[in-house]
Amino acid sequence: MAARRHQVPPPLSCSPRSALDSASHQDVDSILKQFRSCTRRLQIALSSHRLELQVLERLYYKGKNQHRTALFWRRVVEIRRYGDRLQKMDAFNLVENIRLSFWGDTTLHSTKVLKGPWTHTPDVKYVRFVLQRCADCRQLMVKVLPKTFLPAII
Image 1 (tube, rainbow, N blue to C red):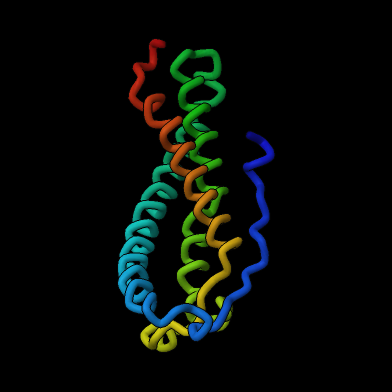
Image 2: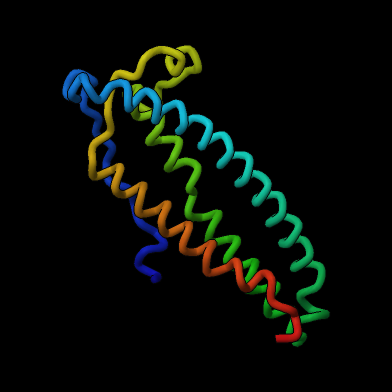
C-alpha cells in the first residue's frame, strides 16, 4: 500500500466544451450543481477532521511520555497515524481541482468566472485518477472506522 500513498496526479488537460456531444451538456450541468454542494460538504467535513486531528495531536504531545506503555495509547497512536494519512491524501484539493477544471485553467479562477457557464471538460485520465484517490480515501476510512469504536482494552 505504500506505493499508493504518494501518487502524483497526471497533468490536467482540458478539452473545450464544443468537443463534447451537445446532448450531454444538460447532464454535465446537473452533475456540476451536485458537485458544488458535494465539495462544500467535503470541505466542512475535512475542516472538522483537521480540528479534531489538532486536538488529538495536542493530547498525544501531552501524554506520550506518561502513557507510552499503556494499551489504550497504542490506539491513540494508531488513530493519529490514520488521521495524518487521510489529511495527506488531500482529497479536497483533488476534488476541487476537477470541479474547477470545467472552467479551464484551475489557477486563474475567481468567483465571477465560476458563475458563468462551464467551458471545458477534464480529460478521462485525470478523472480516473481522482476517482481512484477518492476510492482510496474511502477504503482508508472503512478500515479505520471499526478501530475507532473498539474498547481500549483490546
